[in-house]
Image: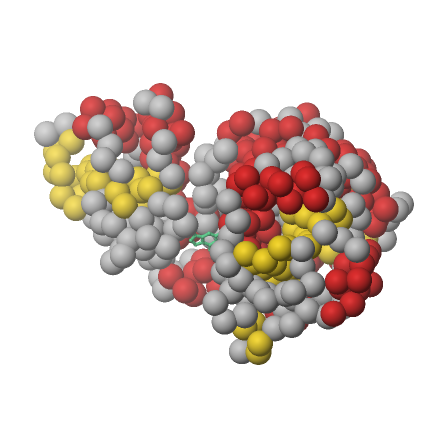
Amino acid sequence: MKQDMIVILDLGSTENTVLARQIRDLGVYSEIHPHDITVEELKALENVKGVILNGGVNRVVDGKEVEICPELYDLGYPMISVDYPASRCEEQFAALPDEEVLKDFIFGKCQAEANWNMKNFIEDQVELIRRQVSDKKVLLALSGGVDSSVVAALLIKAIGQQLVCVHVNHGLMRKNESESVVKVFQDELHANLIYVDAVERFLGKLENVADPEQKRKIIGGEFIRVFEEEARKLEGIEFLGQGTIYPDIIESGTKTAKMVKSHHNVGGLPEDLKFELVEPLKQLFKDEVRACGVELGLPYEMVYRQPFPGPGLGVRCLGAITRDRLEAVRESDAILREEFAKAGLDKKVWQYFTVVPDFKSVGVKNNERVFEYMVIVRAINTVDAMTASVEKVDWDVLECVTERILAEVPNVNRVCYDMSPKPPATIEFE
Ligand code: XMP
């Protein structure tokens, strides 16, 4: 393995991620591990150069005061503690050390090298994937989202045709999205890709269903069923690739909690479809996943695309989905994205999209009364999607978007801009 590692033991701190990021920013790889790690487990990690015991105000995880196994001190790794009384550590700090102190520990005491970069990461992962998978096959649900696309590219590099990608087009994708998945992965990266056209099937199941939660359940459940059907047709698959990333697995400091989380990511496949998971991105933060995608040669638009909900345009075609309104959402979304890109807003605004409600309003076109749909434009900024503020989009851009939507999207006679922050509104409408 190419990369040196500093291990952070989570002893109840709320700042493990901050510390891991600080260390990675210094060019050294860092992983967070639970407080109940055993001597064998720590010894099994490769290239560990030092350990930081990261305590917290109460040093409590899952309601219990934490203590590390005393034998860990005997392994000979340079160790410091933060907000945790450990007299056997070389140094104890009351709060997270500043950059100079951290550098002194990492590069001085631990003699770690600043060799954390995406090139080395990819080389390491290729080796680990090959070790894990050997000559067996891996199945991957390739949605075209950032995480699944980067996993696919990494697995193709590691095991080529032993990876089987399944792309399910549920009819709720954005304009040309499925086509671009096929173009990039099948035509350019020569992936073993199964394209499933399930548009009619999904739209059929969704007919007359107006309740948002019900719609979400149908889309999610049907996705699993389609994927499962494809999996059953294939032979000799032993592994399932997953785009799990670091924030998905580091919420708690115990091994059991970690397992519940990663198990959850299997995504509801039936018990008799037993796969071992391959999760090569599970140690990466989102920005690192994007950097990895760029290093693997994926197109910029794929790697830096804005967040897109799993149920896709299904939650933006409000109420019971109809084909004419779904097309209006898809076309208006494409226009909005084009105009935002022209104005340079695609790199500035966190998320922007259009929504079509399930009612009509009166208008006039060619001197005749019309009764047609409206498009709502939404553009927001946020850090963590828990709260969001509305982007103050330049009036000229909004005018241009409006003109184009009214001229190019059938059945639409009105465009509105959503001024609501989150809370009280959510980012999506359903
Ligand atoms: P809300 O509407 O809850 O959205 O304010 C917060 C963020 O989450 C995205 N979102 C989803 N992402 N699967 C996803 O992967 C989903 O089912 C889903 N629903 C909402 C939403 O686009 C926003 O960025």
